Image 1 (tube, helix red, strand yellow):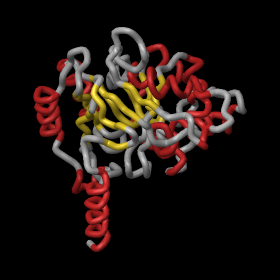
Image 2 (cartoon, rainbow, N blue to C red):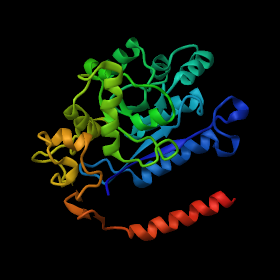
Image 3 (cartoon, rainbow, N blue to C red):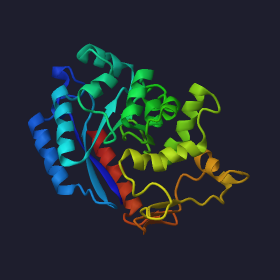
Image 4 (cartoon, helix red, strand yellow):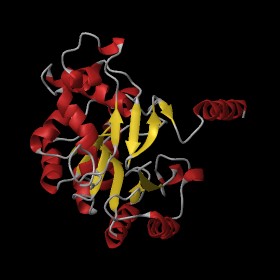
Length: 302
């Protein structure tokens, strides 16, 4: 599988005004040292790379200004990308104004968190000036509509971002706020939210599909994949559109987004089959599901 990993970090716990419990935060010097170790051990900058690493301080409310700034300096010295969560909800805006005296866009600008080597998750609560700032600097966004719905964060201004020229991709956030982490489910949810906010013509199925494919590659700085074209990497997902789910559909792209099969029939990564006829080849899925159920039972039982 092609992996884009983030070395995440949190350094400001509840005792210092942050969100995470103190037991999960790390020493900032140790974070930077280990971040460099992970990049040097695993990051592959070459075209067609199967593993790339980005530095990812979690969020402004769990990481100090100093660590945000130092992570940006370190990432650029190592030639890797930067990722964080930004402007997810009203609480994020209030925290930024109270602690930093500015909105999240200005905070990101002050600490070097703008540019084509940066992408932020969420950005639900941006104002027009922040959208222009991110467009002018080519700073990417990973839109996570199901997470935003589950947490009641709001509707990200994706239509306004696209119109301004902000690089837009789709993401799932994580299992803490997304139960299935299914990218096609995000592609279905995204237009629904935009149409609630902006009407039935706010965004098309093809624009959503582009964000899920070419948009994702662009935000990750990958010009070697994300589309079916000569010279690109052979990463392919194939859906069988002949089932009852799509019977009567006249537009296969719209059918895939709005009513298509959730499970791909075949998936190839770097030209090698990892899913064939709906079966994930590298792992025994029933055995993995059984192990997960046992782990969950142990967690619930304490």
